[in-house]
Length: 95
Image 1 (cartoon, rainbow, N blue to C red):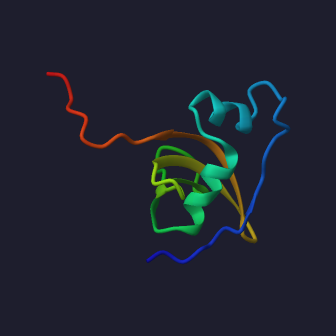
Image 2 (cartoon, rainbow, N blue to C red; image 1 turned 90 degrees about the horizontal axis):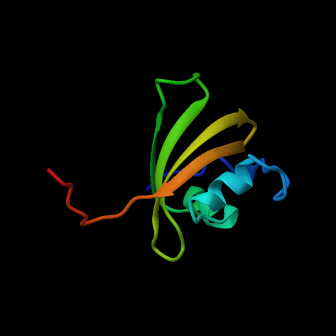
């Protein structure tokens, strides 16, 4: 069971072109769904290809979707989600 470390989220205006809200919606994820992942069981790790405060999280939404989210820990319980996508299970890779 994971402890919640992030309780607040930084979102751009939903009308901002190339903002984080629009970017998630391009991947068929609503900001509220992404936030749900922070309050359920999740796994996260530092994204070593980026800055020290950027993490990758695999978590579940209330509807049972498994999402991978890339976010920044801005300190004091604040997270800024950059992007995310749904992880599909049971899909075989093409050879």
